[in-house]
Length: 244
Image 1 (cartoon, one colour):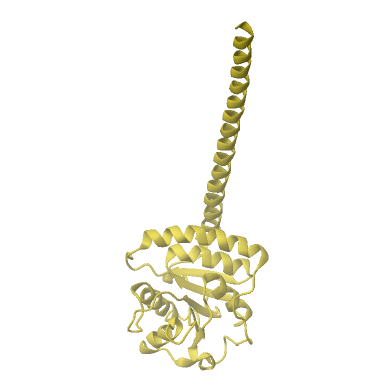
Image 2: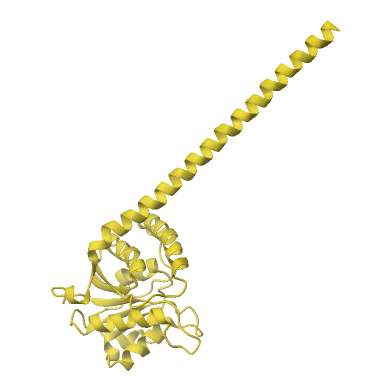
């Protein structure tokens, strides 16, 4: 009987040690996962703060553009187009603000950069028609049909259109990233915000933008080529050469 009790006691101790080891393993695993998550959050917050903080001073009001009259172009970033091929409210505001900038004389040229991936969806064509309707000459309007992302728009502005100094027009939440990429490319870039109103779905856009800043911050270290490049186009020439 004593031998049996001793054996059972030994087994309980062994099982207890095994249970303790398993518990310690999961505690360490939990702490490691918690540390990784904490570092990830700090990284996300840090990169976003850095992108915003380094570009904030480059966002100007239309009235502050004096002295930038030799900009190569006003770069308008594309976004949604309505089914009737008119600009969405967000795109309309970008275009209206860009026209304000254009009328200051800061640049003679527009560069409309957006998605024209197929014939049924054409952001840049819509943008061009809108400013023509406001009296802008077709020779002053260049279209980048392959501006499929903010990164690609900036990359192609530099490598295809030879842009060295630019005024970028988009909503403020988007401007920080656009300016960061442009300046990282060696473009002297300034931005004008086109926030005339509140936009439906803006909270979702803001959340997406946090992730997009991380993505493009990383891309700026190794510069992946855009979907398309193509032959150089002189931004100081005739914009009609970009009509597709």
